[in-house]
Image (cartoon, rainbow, N blue to C red; front, side):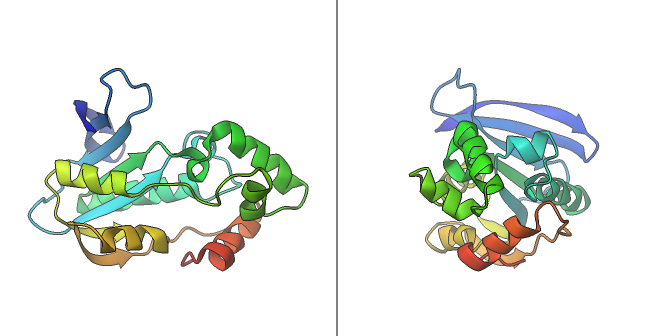
Length: 192
């Protein structure tokens, strides 16, 4: 994987350098790094590893907390500087089509974990080592990780990137995502 292109993007959170990483120069879905203009690469960099969630990130779905987490991370990075690594791993790595199928099963009573298993899919097929590779390419060697997911912490435990702490990413639950959040906590060990 290599850096294929980058450009400055003015946003409500300040100026972000968007960098696209892929093996192919014409990849339609490269992984993205968003680097805030205030980022101090000498100190530990506030970092969010965020897997794509088109329903939550783009369309504001309230079935999950993904979009709210992404915006909370952008708010924090706007204040302190930092980086968001946006991984193209929709639906915990199952893709949007299977995610929609899983939503239908959830509407019938299965939780998010059981819906994936019912479809013959992994509970979580994401690969966080991609994010570590991108951070290395950006020259980042020490991070404070914005996460509630113990799997992300574990990925950093076996890497060249020094993890100097976890920063909780707290977004208030609401009636539409409460069951989803409980499942993440009880079955996947997330800190909420």
